[in-house]
Structure formats: structure tokens, C-alpha cells
Amino acid sequence: MSEPIRFLDRLDRCFLKGEKKIDAGSNFLIKISGLFLVLLMIHTVLDVFVRFFLPFVLPATIEIIGYYYMIGAVFLALAAVEKDGGHIRVEAFDNHVSQGVLWSSRLLGKIVTILFVSVLLYGGAHRLQDAWQSNEVTFGHYSIHLWPGRLLFVVGVFAFCVVSVIGLLRLLRPFGTVTPYNSNSGKER
Image (cartoon, rainbow, N blue to C red; front, top):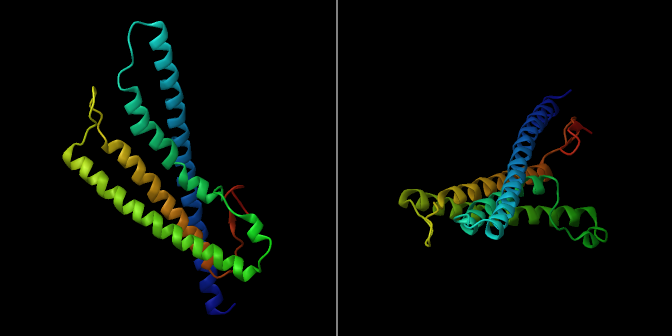
């Protein structure tokens, strides 16, 4: 085997190992996202039960749900959804163009996605830093610290950005002798 082929083969194997670690991280984040959904459900049902059957109300339910549970449920799941290709895609377009045009449109889509998500990540990181340094809280009857929700946002958007970059590299990488890793089955195909 020639030296460039060996190099590409080693590079491909390293890429696959990194891809598996990213998959494990995004799977962990979607489990945490599911936990936030369960907490949201329990908190909401408990709040409704307490309002109708007991003489008091759970404090700050709307704030906790809005600033913590919803952000955790939505943004922590983004990386796993991107990894599995679960975002909306116009397949009618895919069926009527050549492979070159399809590859080019996916490449452009990945680049635009990474640029947009990078701007979100930059802004979110600054908002997190400001909320942390100023000990920012909500206004109202109850003071809720905002930095945990901002941290959930930054972690979720960062993971989404990493998975998008991996997707871009997957489009660009030279095909070595190792077959691509299928993240859905956990096996090489």
C-alpha cells in the first residue's frame, strides 16, 4: 500500500473514532433533554394539582419552566437531531438533481448552518458571561437566576455546532479504506 493511501486510512480511522465520541456526547445530551421534558411535565401537572386541590400555589412555576426546562429540552436535543438528519429537508429537490448539485447544495447548507450557529454561540456565550458576572435575575415576585438557562443554551448550541462541523467534514473527507460509521446502528457499515 502506498504512503498516501496509508495516511488517508489512518486519518479516516481517527475521524471515525472522533465521530463515535461525538455521537456518544450527543446521545448523552438528548437523554438530559428528555429529563428536562419529564421535569417540565411533572412540574406542570403538580402545579395544576396544587392550584385546584390545595390552598396554595407552587412558586415561580412559569419562570422555572420558561428559563430552565424549555431551554434544556429544546437546545440540548439539537445535536442529536442534526446527527440523525432529523431536520426538515426538501427531498423533492434531492430527487431531481444530479449528485454534484446535491453535494454542492448540502455543502452550502452545512456552511451556512455553521456560520449561523457560530453567531448564535458567540452571542449566547456573551449573554452567559454577562448573566454570570452581574448575577442577573428575573423581575417579578420570585428572583430566578438566569445563568443556568443561558449555560444550557450555550452547551446545546455548541454541541450542535460541533455536530454540524463533523457533518461538513464528512462531506469533504476523502474516502479511505474504512467504511463510514453509521451512528444509528452503532456498527460500521
